[in-house]
Length: 434
Ligand code: ATP
Ligand code: AMO
Picture 1 (cartoon, helix red, strand yellow):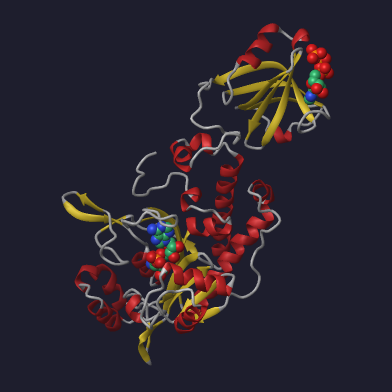
Picture 2 (cartoon, rainbow, N blue to C red):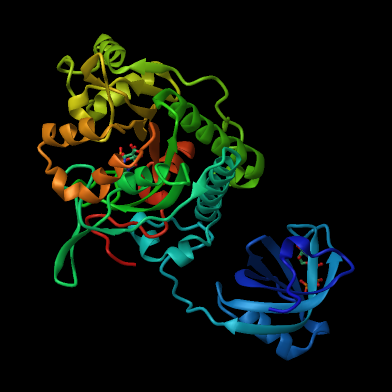
């Protein structure tokens, strides 16, 4: 709309056209107010019934809440107005009338359950709390992109329809690709590795991944967004440095640029960007510490994956972000490198938030013979991955990388109870639309 002014920018003395949603109408008799809301805030529009054109007053006051209107008039100072200024309208145009029956109340006065909110995301993201989450999510991605640019990483996009899975055989969504079996990709893993051997060397991707996991939990999605990073000529320790740097950059950007949003979410006082180095515990130290907490019914033994209760117990014990390194090779995928002097131990790592895992990563196996051997050890047929393995014959540098789940990063950052709060249109066992 030409010459539209955001409500937050309307200054006394200006003649403006503001446009947005009818947040509220307060009719006090001789005087009435329409509160207009847009992305930037709200503004009061004043109707003095005896002094104004009847049609104008009627248009302004008969419109239903959440209708879209544009208002043209003078901005004046008014200390009794919620923002200290108000508009005296000369012209009002109803651009889209809203039904008087709304499926949820965007003012938040009447609470709606998550399912109703997700069914009506357009209305839900008119609520300041919901809007704040997605503004913060966008800020996180912006900060991460800036960080990657600063360390010389090139953004790439890899295919989402693929011929094979990478993260274990069972969690793939199958589809038919011109008569051939294909799958929705679970991870850019193999493609990002292929690109560290290319002239790009250091790459990142922010994109969707698909996992046909059966479980329906507050921290799993069937379609999630991943931040993937991969770089030539670094080892797993340096990859952890970058991972930690990315997380700190995201938190700092939110602390710096999202004060209003944090306030809306009631987090302004407690929100802190982590500054200290994240502890790096080996897997062995981790299971010892978990066992020492006494929180688990059964003691963990070397080789066990960490169940949710174990992650929680250790998270409470450590009290902040931390890495778990040196995992048993057996529970890490074929592309993770093992220690040459101890093949049972891998150079894989996880970054943990006290509530859950945020990142997996590791040093990769870049030596062709070892890589093919790894396929056999994990019962996979290397021939199926020929497009990948053969590039390791043509000069694949040592490399390492990792991947974050964006929704988990946002969820833990904002202390959200359910991962679905951090994605606009979640895909889960029950939800395929909207
Ligand atoms: P009437 O006498 O017909 O009720 P009026 O034009 O005389 O209307 P007031 O009596 O001054 O209006 O105000 C009615 C209520 O509206 C009061 O509570 C007053 O504080 C409030 N009010 C008046 N003008 C504004 C304004 N511009 N912004 C916010 N509140 C206002
Ligand atoms: P992994 O499978 O551990 O590793 O996934 C990396 C991170 O992605 C997030 N994540 C999910 N978030 C929500 N719902 C899901 N179903 C889901 N699955 C994963 C988690 C997890 O830590 N290729 C490796 C990464 C690498 O080594 O670079 C991988 O995909 O936050």
